[in-house]
Length: 236
Ligand code: IPE
Ligand code: MG
Image (tube, rainbow, N blue to C red; front, side, top):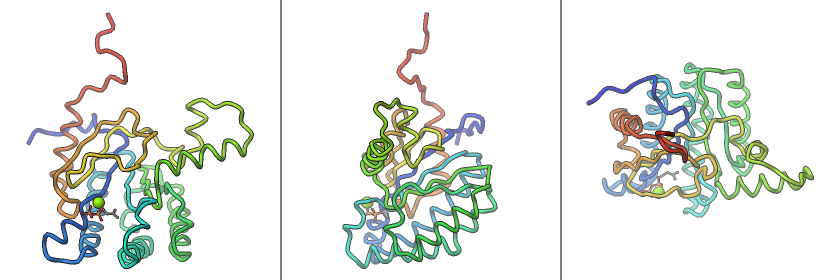
């Protein structure tokens, strides 16, 4: 495989985790097994991405629409978050990644919300990377919340910089590259504003089977793209 240019990595990548359920069902397993394996995959991929030197990673973990899933599945996901914020994410602390959360996590069970607060506090001075977990997140929700806060603050006019400051992601760079697993080619309400100039990569593999090698392949594809941001290459 061609070699990655570590000086040309995307600064901010977004990961849309998808295909956990289908991966499990295909193996005759209950959907929740897909979430369990998918969670281990996430930790493995985050570590690898930080090791490569990716600055910021946003992960779509739980959407505002995921509450509509069967109660047992939602509860299982909550249990995974409970475990993650109690123990598993600590493994990531050594990568010096500051945690950010996009979404209204106060709607999560109280003990989990409290653990999230503790993790935010513990990592608040970490400097090497940024890890943004989207929890009870939806882009429409984020944008409407921003507009309502702008109204509350009595602003009569905003520009893109001011508007950006009202988003959960205000301290993060814009997305450069979004990877979605499991073959679906859509954004599903993930960071619409932040994705304005992002490149996209749709991977057929379901998330639990995702590998470091697949991430390498995606990053190589990114490095072969020409980003023009609406301009043209040769200004002459
Ligand atoms: C993504 O996998 C995990 C979450 C949304 C939490 P899915 O659960 O959407 O898996 P499929 O798409 O049903 O296979
Ligand atoms: Mg899905």
